[in-house]
Image (cartoon, rainbow, N blue to C red; front, side, top):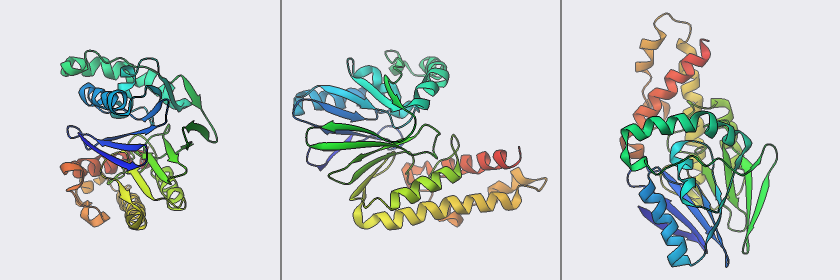
Length: 275
């Protein structure tokens, strides 16, 4: 697992096992906040060990940017911590997370000690604020990838943990293309130093404008391309002709997962447009 100090007492972790998924830690003098957990127990436990042994503080809060397994199933490895999320995240973890974990355990023995821990502290509208030492964390809705998505801004450092509302290839199968575009446009106006994507590498200040433009162009392009064929009888077959490169992205992103994400975006948009 990769680890990097982003600023004073702010750390970033990236999985080497699953889809370059990321997590974060913001530490104060007495306790720390974890932002998302990783896909497999070993990596999540490595984060906990780093906090407890190298930073020498306990974890008081775990923030889930959304309910998906690679961001929330590790809640159980921080006993005693208060889990914070959007209200819809709690509902989705209970409705979908529990049966999904039961099915996944049959395929992956590494998940045998995992259990779903729904958020204890939730919000629905507006923002929520947590103070960690000298840092203010502003937790806000960030929909598009899913309808329970949130982001976490480290206000003093202008570092945004964007969750999956910002990814190398936006993924809207469980969300809304229009909501994702709106979230990205909001991010563009925040005056950030860094964007920590839900998957992939950290985006630095000088790269933010280009990354925002590329993601908006991609989402606009796939929406336009699918709409153009949606009324044709062979629309599903024609999806294969909408190449990821033609929509402004590369298939090499995320260790080669980009093409699969792109194809699932196309299929989801076609289903939505033809309902």
